[in-house]
Image (cartoon, rainbow, N blue to C red; front, side):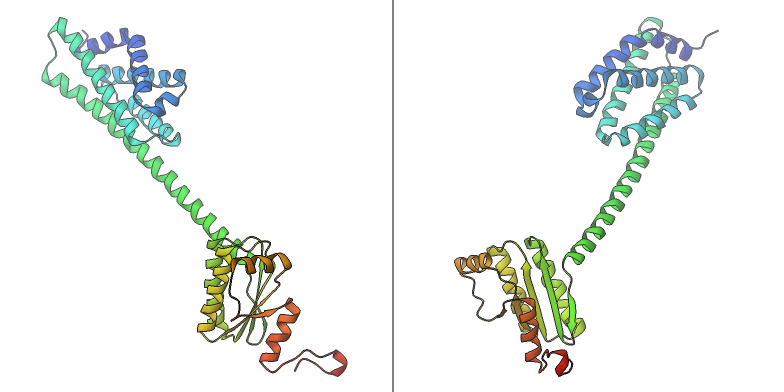
Length: 291
């Protein structure tokens, strides 16, 4: 003889198609992520949820229901859903379940507290499994995103360092060849790396070569001045070389004061100026070596 719970499940199963359609449209109307899903796909998931729920209530075998809950949780996490979306679905599932039980008992008057507890236990197990599965996959994805972001940051740092090399050209002399567009972030990084290199190598002179910099604006000019002044504060002389006609005109128009900076026409000229300040010079090979 069929049990009360089995009769309830049969009653619900008989109305499965209509219930699933209404459930699906409710979710799509309430949450943007459900609305963005293909309706057929969502309807199939809702139908399976209801079928396995009724089966678990009728038989007491909740494993198919829990397997489905785990699959749905994983799929929703991978699709970019948020916990609020799942809570909306779980709340509606509860409403549907209890509305169906109430409709059944309205005619039969046989549902007891024991039946209600058993149904509630099944709903509780489904919700807990769904949210646990969702949370696990969500955390894994967040960890992957964090790892990827960390790797990208390291790669970007490496690229920046390669794009702004600081070269020890001679004892006490550093050369900073700047190439490409310099924004405020890169300019700040140049200052930081240069001051660190000066301290590490105990350098006395720094040659900044801007031959490869296509544009100098107010921000970049100010950063160059700040870098120069910071270096001078720790006892380092700065030689700026590679100023082309266009950049020279821009610097004049901007009113940038370079009076405290030693200017050289080219890197070769800058090196000669640097060597002269430490009592060295470049001589032709026939006259000897660097001294």
